Image 1 (cartoon, rainbow, N blue to C red):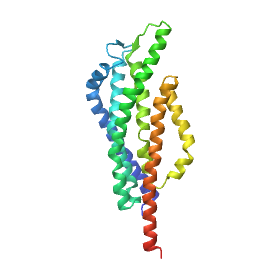
Image 2 (image 1 turned 30 degrees about the vertical axis):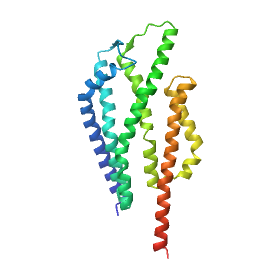
Image 3 (image 1 turned 90 degrees about the vertical axis):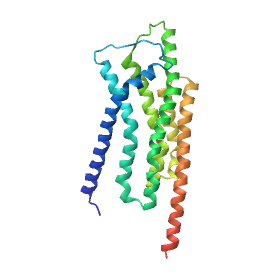
Image 4 (image 1 turned 180 degrees about the horizontal axis):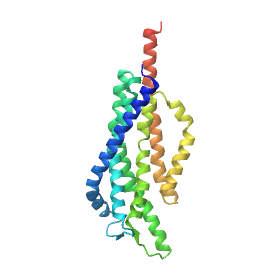
Length: 246
């Protein structure tokens, strides 16, 4: 039986592992920054646009931004594995195997979120802002840091939100959440997701709906997956009760 200090020591060790993966991911990100940058500046809507540096630090800052985003791609599944390893002693053998299966889906859902936010949400937000600038007869001179900050402020939050089904399934496995509680939280969850959709998109109903609808669908998928996990838990509890309850 581990003491509270043993748990704290184990948690610290897991956090150190995650930080190591994050640093390693940032180093790899620095190596991949050039090809990723070249790909992105040759895609619509920025293709052919002149991006400017307004500071001597802009180039270095841009490398660091790319390194951090690329590092997240590698650090998220590593972090999920370390979390699984931390809670593993509290899980049964079947629960351990089932929870471990979530780890690769952390990466898959993050990549899906990146694709959705980059190819769907970002063009809408960019086109809206440039249309406003043209309407006001403004000269569009974009700084490279400002452009990619705007881009990553959309990509990262939405990509992380795509982890919602995985997080909810994992918490259901740990019996922290259940579908009944999630259904009770539905109105609040819808409100929060709609607010997020409004914040990261242009202020028009169509754009807001195109973002909020998939996020709400993700929540409903999460509830469905939680119900499947919870149902299996109840069946296992009933089987145990029948075998050992008397």
